[in-house]
Image (cartoon, rainbow, N blue to C red; front, side, top):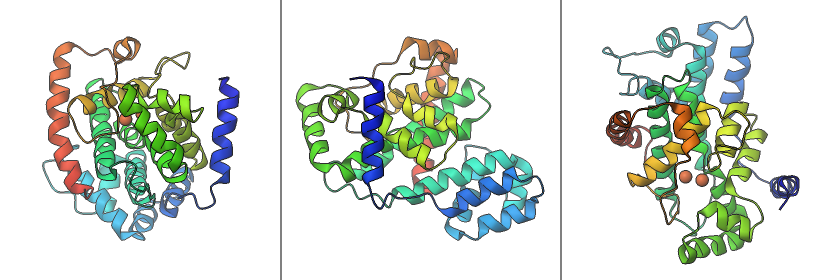
Length: 287
Ligand SMILES: [Fe+2]
Ligand SMILES: [Fe+2]
């Protein structure tokens, strides 16, 4: 099917949903504040503190093994000074996503608990890959990993009958879920998720990480962030960190591997660190 027709179909589904969950206003506020040149650290930390659940989770993440600081960072103001505004914005995004995803009700089509473990597993392994390959924005890659399969949740929540068919087809044929979706729905969860991310006004990089996580060679120049999410998805599936409902381990695209420019022994390190950080993330993020 033509790409334009697929996009049209996805847009139509999204616009027909009346109560689509939105990101907490705190993320939008923080994004605006950071863009405005006259915002002070105090204003930004006070704004984050308006949402206590988010403020607490941001501080927990700052003090986790992801950053490995030797001393505890006790306040948001200090966290902003040490990590910088952009990193804090991405942490607010991560925690906002976690708050929002709890609003989706996917019924019984697939195991939500396993699905979120898979999403966190992909976020963690993509972030570790990003760090290991010296990308400049690992926290942004984490958010992309967290959201990579969000389209499946939209399908499960709002297209439940058709999606039940997709799940049955994956079980029966062993096709990748995006292939069964294309067969049955006419579009796939990567396209659906990227349209939602656009609607949430997330950065273009995040939208691309979602859109191309199964087809990392789609854009003319493949961004390293997309490659990290693509390989992260395979790694967390191979490590059995939760389940995204796939029957088989997704094949790694060679172009993605080349773009990240990692050595084979880097992979061993990535696997060990991913497994360790996954456990910690699950406990911090409340699963
Ligand atoms: Fe996927
Ligand atoms: Fe996935």
